Amino acid sequence: MPWQKACHKILGGKYELDLIFAPTPFMRQMNRRYRRKNKSTNVLAFSLARREGEIMMDPALAKKEAKFYGEAFKKYLWRLYIHALLHLKGLRHGLKMDKAAAKFLKIKWRAT
Image (cartoon, rainbow, N blue to C red; front, side):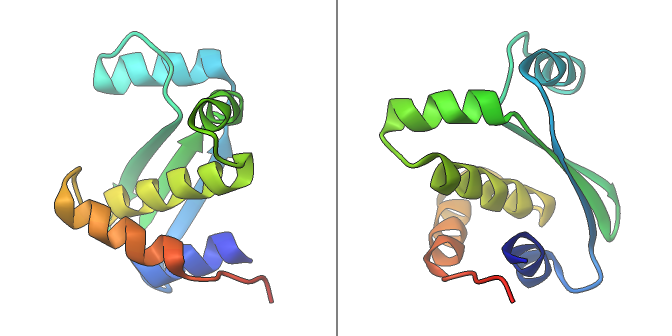
């Protein structure tokens, strides 16, 4: 599956990742608890251990944002996923993260 391939390519083959699709109210609660921001968010990434993490995504919010940015929903969701993987790898927002994201978004991930 492309989701697993991207995870293994970015984080390593032995990385265990949970991917959770959550509703907007839950994402708002999590964003408030962990980031102290009283609004929903499209994606959150949590490192749980050295080789274990969790990504939570709000597909309803992502769908609205994709429409706003004029991007296909699946492509936008993929962009958020890659972004979260890079955070789990330890990258922070900035030029280095932008370059890494661009590199991984160019790959044609195929299910096998």
